[in-house]
Image 1 (cartoon, rainbow, N blue to C red):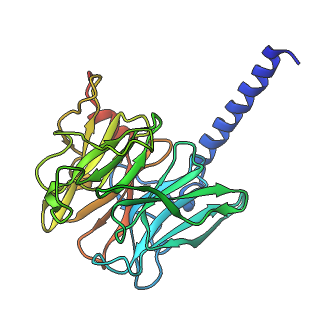
Image 2: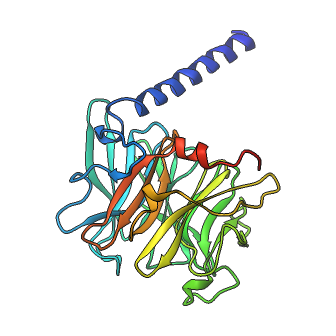
Length: 301
């Protein structure tokens, strides 16, 4: 078989995989078969995600082909005693779940190749855990990163850079107002962490965020007061600094509520986030995002 022919076969196979992935994400079976939202956010899969006494919250994680959806449930904002990571899986005919993947962990994030799942824990604030995809499912979570500083909302990117909220070397663990959105280098042996500066950081607690796989933008939570938090976006410039924060608008940020756990679907089409004024009404919402992103993105960076 010639090298040219071999390359052509590989290229066509890759195209077919890409088409199949796109087709599923655009099919009526995607996203648990839920009717997609428009520009106004709505609760994602009401009645399907959480058991009685639980609420769905925290960052969602969806596999590249759209056939696995991971999220968290809990019974209290105050502790992680009942915290669980659950998931649904599409078997080719129907969605199976919810199934408990692990307990006392959250802030789920996929590796860029979707072969690893990362988690953080409120009980072990300086650690990142990971599970490896195997032929029979996911391995049990094990310690992946252990640092002398706190790590929250860990997310890896295609470049190898790893983003997190942290007190780094600049703040005391007990001082939530010292937390900053930060970047860790690709090498796991390099234990340094760098504050991203302002913007995207500002005074007060800098915690929940989503970073695009290509690091082109961040969606961050900005606490407005004790009764609420809103979502903002910052774009990375060519010089690797960040644009000023831009609100995601009144349809998403209108009214008093806590908004956190943001995640953008693999095709960039939908934004998922947790929304709640109390534990009783806390739930995962979703909203059309690609049109909003195009509207908010500066013409020059």
